[in-house]
Image (tube, rainbow, N blue to C red; front, top):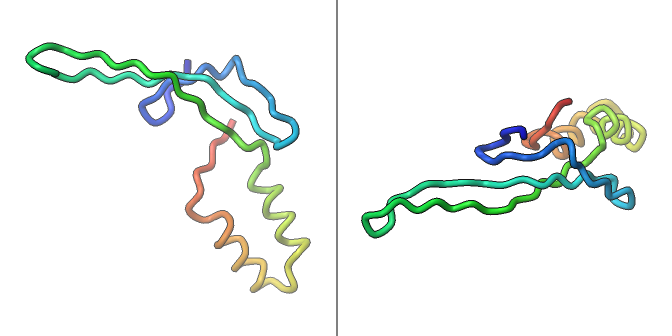
Length: 88
């Protein structure tokens, strides 16, 4: 199990979705809280979708569509900056 943002995911059992170039990863989330003077354990099933396109692939696609270097940089900022990127 691998911890990602307080949730745990089983990276060994990825499910490939080839039509959309995605991986579906099963996992779970847990929390413990006090509820009416007793401890409450909450365990939930979660899933994470990972797109298999790399940042390099995205930049190469944008470079092919851009008119010049300034347009390419603007497109990169719009499409890539602020996104969550996971590395292997």
